[in-house]
Image 1: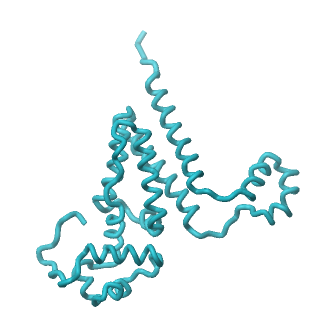
Image 2: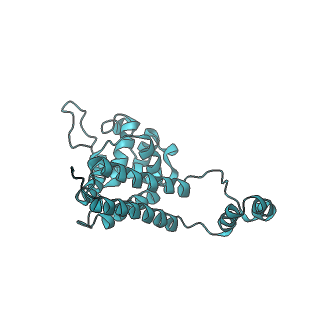
Image 3: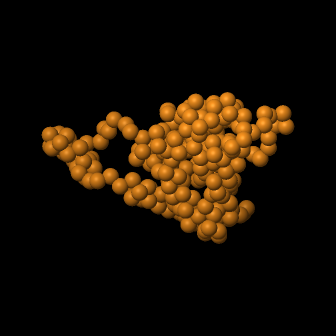
Length: 230
């Protein structure tokens, strides 16, 4: 993953490459999810023995780390000099990645920052924010807040759960009781019970709020009075 190989490592299997292994593993995970991924299943997909795979990847955990770094590729960096546009592009690129490869959500939530491509994504966000006038700690907190928001929205949209949001049938029966005791909440729940979920719209709304907050913080820092000694 970092471009180095143990000199004592076993030689490659003719006709098989690490790129082919990772491509097949990603395709399998996209199609059937991570639970279906095993070294034996993957070797069958490739038409090689399981031992042939171990010439390239020693453990399944290593395979997962390599897969994650493989799909992250190069981070988006086209909005140089415009921190807001750059962070928005960064967040939407992460959203697209999670929608394209839903299994990535599980890996990024349970594994540390391991590979160079994932590091490059984080570095791209840092590079966008550093000239904005925030401290290193503030940049870190900003990037982490956006990352957690994108992942949280993706988790709600992609991971099947017991839906505890009111549906139309539930609301028709219980709406009058809720409205009598919690009228303000009832108005919101009535809308939630009948509208069609649009995750991209929700993502854009929340992301704009976060970016507005960052912009307000930068404005406050810019106009903060300088203290003088009397």
